[in-house]
Length: 239
Image (cartoon, rainbow, N blue to C red; front, side, top):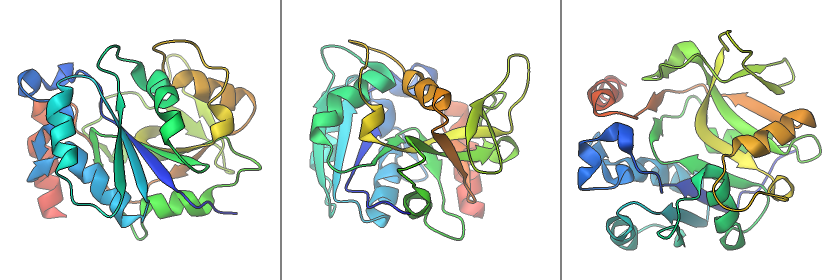
């Protein structure tokens, strides 16, 4: 089975505390890496995948980000999910934006990661691997050894069918979440009020045996701090 992705959400409302001092005067999605703002790297990948509508959530220094998005000349429409009054975290942000998102499943992309495609377009690969009968979410994951700039202990184990399970306490997991996922609308129900993490949805999908992963075959960069920018730019140049 496969999916036709009609719309995408770009997560861009965070405070960018780890990126200080660069975020003292600009939101993190507008920090420049490899010649353009971080969010433009995400929008480029969405454009390459042919998706027709994008929703971006905003909170910190929202006016600057809105102005940047308004100046975009893209073949897709861009709508704003306004979180100026209250930062809703990842899960709450998805729920607020949901009425503006069409189709099923929905692509969700974090704005502070950069990736390059492997042999095939990664978003198109996600769409081809989507099976709504078995999955409520399909996460693009990468082996920890290939997760440039990521210092964690991994996020998930993946079985031969692609089903994901959490890293065990005190252990290391081989796969890292890249910040790119397909999510079914049926998972985005019965949500808490206000701010909450996407982990609530993922835990629900894991309990039902419906959280799956797809291993990313290209490069991936966690651009979370000023110190990560130089190595990312060098690796992209070498690539």
